[in-house]
Image (cartoon, rainbow, N blue to C red):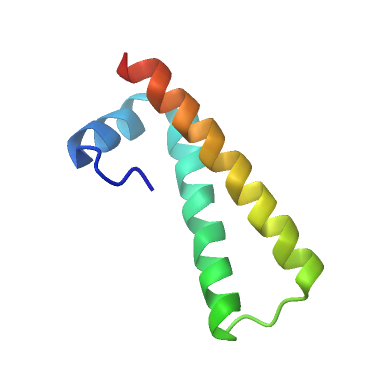
Length: 72
């Protein structure tokens, strides 16, 4: 996530904004779960995987909103 954005600005935002940091780490956690489910390492049913993907998308949208608001 945030490809093409300066890593320093993301790190700075994570230090300055606890909400952004919390959302970012939760997104990373869900990203790992979806990757593991895709590899078959994490046995998970389709409904649960769908819920995880929806939550992950919502988090990404929130993170992008916060980033855009604070970057301009």
